[in-house]
Image 1 (cartoon, rainbow, N blue to C red):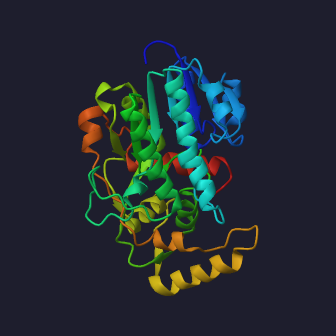
Image 2 (cartoon, rainbow, N blue to C red):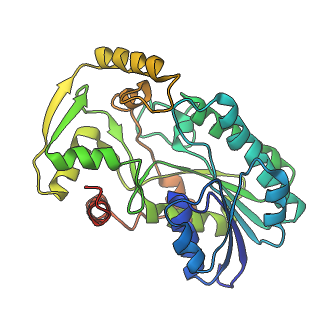
Image 3 (spheres, rainbow, N blue to C red):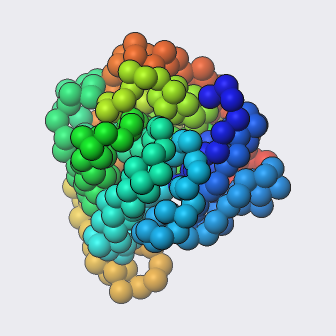
Length: 331
């Protein structure tokens, strides 16, 4: 986008949304943002000029009002994984909310919409690296409803709305207090409990690489009606990833390997015991499964059709993220 325009961003104060909103503001665009809560960057983004609103994409009237007059829509808002979050909440936000956003975009003839899905729609990748033609195999309600959100996108594509979809891999970087934090925290201590042998593949995606890809996708004519896997250049074995994080802190990480099934059974027990409580259990099945599920992706479609090139490599990204954690006093 060379000219300055009005852009609507859902999930605007979350980790990814805040980075995108900041980028758009730096480019001189007018940004209208919606999020269900203020988030860490709410105040800073308002000071930069973002028009931020607290509310839900499930509120069709609010979404309609905020969409009017916008020339681009980035739909990032989603119900993410939380203990005791019901199937209905996932469905209402990730499917119903997507329908609300696209309905408003179509009503006001928004020229282009980007929908942020997840690489998780492919589930545990059986044959690595997976490309966009890999089987759709969501493994939990988050992944299932994100896929159903893509189904809604397809419905509106067939009605003539310009939409492109990105499926990000494992997003990390400065400003992320959750996703990669425990990996960094444990690696910084110099010892790590590894479920299994640590040889499964994980595919990181540095946050600004994702923002680059999103901007390319929404401005590339050929991206219309398509979905793209977005990741960094290479996947990495989990054991090696933890080792690399340790090196950022000057540590050689010592691994203690434990078998999968006993830990999984313990996680299931924790999940059941904590279900009536407001707190999250110290261990639950999804975290255990993380150690044994392959996530490695082929990004050639994004390279070929969007001109995407991951600008920040793993070592640089890990170093920047570690520095942010230290600046925030988290590590």
